[in-house]
Length: 286
Image (cartoon, rainbow, N blue to C red; front, side, top):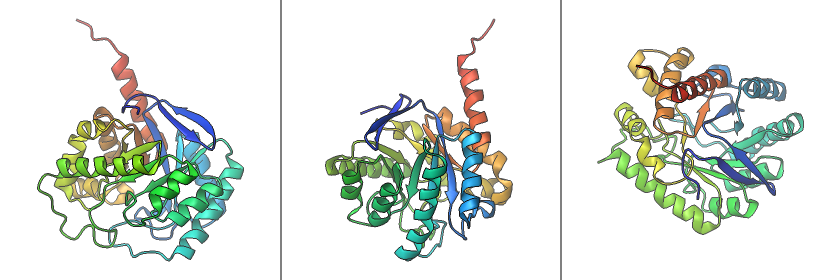
């Protein structure tokens, strides 16, 4: 089991892929109702153009989602999610044969079909709890698996979320789901504390400050902070105005040990990574 901060080595379609963290995951929302309006991609051409920009700006992974998980979002019918996601993944695989593609879904059927059509990873906001077939499906297709903490469902998660100790409870949940994934036979797992998924502002900042505890689970840690409400509530901004705030929080996440930044804006995330690397390598003078 690799520890956070070490090279990430995944088995992907029968080959080993090595990433030197921290790395950037670029978001591709094949949905008309993403909370960031500029990232709502309705056509294959828009998906490919956005993917090309993300890759050019330094993204190592592309995360394709067809069902919005914004607070209050209703459950999308399976057939509609399939119709959005699979053509996008097929097109991305043809256009960018060497890119690492993640499918953002909680449905086992979509995960399986997405991998069959060219996806490399499965990113599940429910950590396998919304579909009882998810863990064994991911194990069967031998894909790396990202599991996330969420209190409730997207429809209910922001209705007065409550914890006794948010950091302890999230780490316990991730530990239990990591063990369940291992028992199911999933070799490569990433954990995501789920910023904004059943958390208020105080919960989110406590988790950000407590990321070193999440690192103790010994697997890569993903931080998804991009343009979220925790930024806008502090700064009085909208998601469209939250790029600078996102960069600040991404920097804090990197300092706390995040391995993967899931973002709408790859270039700015890469700039934070490069500047922190230069800072870490510099020697103080007296």
